[in-house]
Amino acid sequence: MPDIVRHTLSGLLVILLTSGLSAYADVETSEQELTPATQGELPLQALRNFADVFNQIRQSYVEEVDDETLLENAIRGMLSGLDPHSDYLDASSFEDLQNHTNGEFGGLGIEVGMENGFIKVVSPIDDTPADRAGIQSGDLIIQIDNKPIKGLNLQEAVTLMRGPAGSKTILTILRNGVSAPFEVPLKRDVITVASVRGELLEPGYGYIRISQFQSRTGEDLQKELAKLNAGRKELQGLILDLRNNPGGLLQASVHVVNEFIDEGLIVYTQGRLPNAYSRFMANDSKPANSTPLVVLINGGSASASEIVAGALQDHRRAVIIGTRSFGKGSVQTVLPLSEESAIKLTTARYFTPSGRSIQAQGIEPDIIVERARIETLAPGIEITEADLAGHLGSGDGQESTSVSRKAEKGQREGLAADDNQVYEALNLLKGMYIMSMPKTASSDINTP
View 1: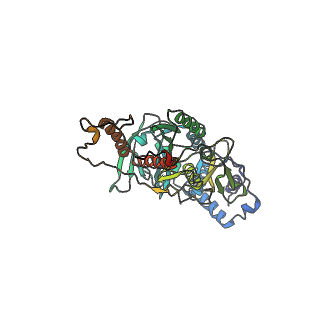
View 2: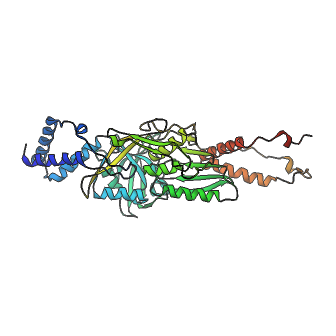
View 3: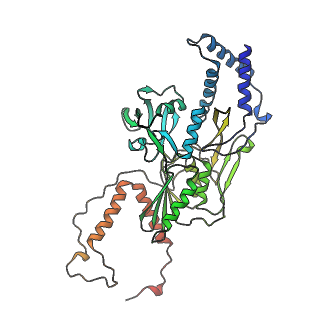
């Protein structure tokens, strides 16, 4: 084996086996050490094979390739062969990771992973070029600007999708249920993600959408809850929408759960290293929000959003509605190799408070509600007592007109047509509120 290869290979192995861990983005922050017991014996023959292949490429490949590029490619290959989320991060990739977590980055606005050599859409990010173009969770991207994805690693494919704001690209999509691939033209933009937004669907019933878990998500959630509770009518129910939320910071998901429970386990992680075992507990420093809660999830809800749904489900704090989540229950930790490069390595799995593994299982909703298009059947002409000329009043001073009833009905039908899952969640919240009201005492009921 040539000395230069031995020395380079030895240096590479030392880096991989002794780098300290510092976590970032969707991972646990910790410092871990590899002990001699975990390192084990290096397979000498396999290392010899590696060195032989390395030397053959240096001498015989049709074009000259420098040693640094070969070793970098070897690292990429080792990581990509482990799972879809382990990856090599060069200086540009690490900067992108930081920007993504802080809530602003350039590109199309798609959270992606690898599946069978193609790029799979985990979810489009709200109000981004991908979202506006109709990209859906589960879509496979097979070409970018007519360049096949097959054979590229995840980072290379993501690099192709990035570019200056205003520049154009074309994605070729393979979608389940569509017979042939189709092209989607997009214009790149600076992606600024508003992590949390809220609104009142009806007096007393709030809606909060978390599109991603960023460093400020917990704080932003508190602000939105305060706004909703400042309305004229006290909140009687809240919908927390985590659909197509690809995840983000673990600590942010813990903060969100902590808003709704006073005590107990939120999530724990387990891995091969002793320090990969962590438990995250609720903080009872302030009273938890006790508004009746429904959480919406779907196949695009991944990682941190699954932690939130699983914890609230296990604590019986919320009813989970929608479809089974993505099932991304692994922890990625960033291990610096130098000041300009790092590797993102899967080091542990997430578990819900009751011990359920999220990985490849996902969160099963309490009530399954598929996304559907609802059309109200035309009832024809409706005439009620209130429409008759000279009708008697109700006697309690409260009058209802056909105009007001039609307006209320139109509002309900509009929500059902736009988003049937939110509509079902709202109906459930109303039922929960009605059943929680104190029972009317018999003395309060006027008998004839």
